[in-house]
Image (cartoon, rainbow, N blue to C red; front, top):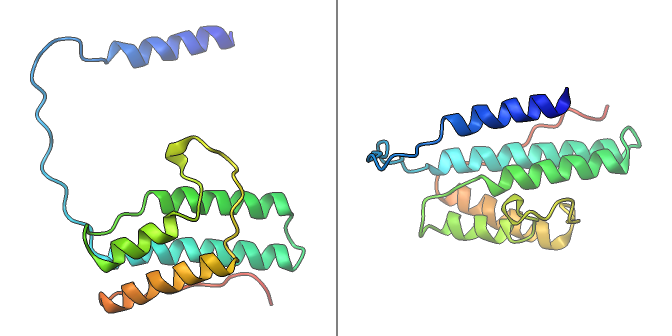
Length: 144
């Protein structure tokens, strides 16, 4: 049964493949990402990390749950973009360099979002956001 489902799904995926040499036009050019969008995504990532850490530190979640949330945050960060050539883009790259990339295929590689290194890169990114006129905000929903 499962093999039949896999085969059926495989057929479904391959039946839509373009095999002719017909020209495929790309869509309209992508709209450049704004600092507000980039910094909003950084806010969401830090919110996730902060709440996961607080929950773990207060023994309301396990280390596995904390690591899972950290890995999710790393995947989210991997998808954040900034306008090329900006200070924000450089600071974002510094932050990204500290986490495992989902594009590399390396899963569950440990990284410490509470480390001095991470904090320094995060402070650099938030300063770049502020300079670009976009604040980073964090929401805490755990604790008392």
